[in-house]
Image 1 (cartoon, rainbow over the protein chains, first blue to last red):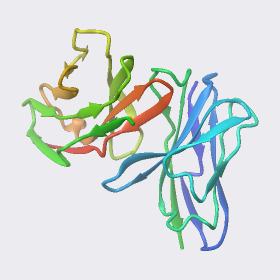
Image 2 (cartoon, chains in turn purple, green):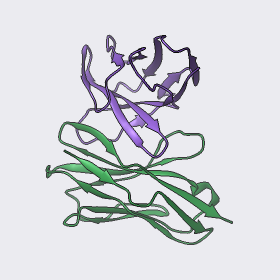
Image 3 (tube, rainbow over the protein chains, first blue to last red):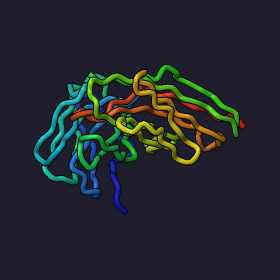
Image 4 (tube, one colour):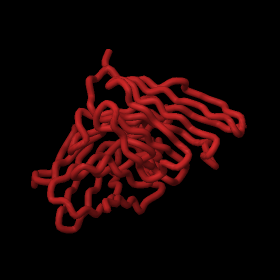
Length: 113
Length: 113
């Protein structure tokens, strides 16, 4: 079945460590996105990519990095520079960036211990 | 900048009754789309309904309908014959131009049996 797969569902990280969240889609979508969700904050955009080998910072990119080496994959690295990384992370994709709805993965809950 | 505001953090409705969730937005673009997403306890984001700005007719999907007031920049969601399965967080979202989806902070809907 076509869809977006995020892994793992739950992730624990020690302070000072980098960690990478996986996002894979087989919908042949050009655009992919990473959002962060905190209680009472809605979804805030971290990074997005319109095509392979290109990506742009969103509203809260500090402490995060991404790559887009393949159309299907858009991994997110949470670095040690991210001061408050505990959150729910959602990956999404859309056919293109202009005026189309986004489809979401199941999310990854990251907890710093 | 594009913004989306949901002024009701929480709402409740009796089963089988009707409830309306409010959303206002701001954009300088003339071509844009509006969406309502549902996030149940599983945290999977599900598209409920979409509205193209150029269409005057309000979108409808079964028990879900919108009241799109373009001049007032208002986009409310009406849920008729509410069911227990409608209990969730509801997010209003806007996409315009080349800007990725922008979300409101959400409204938590409770359905009372």
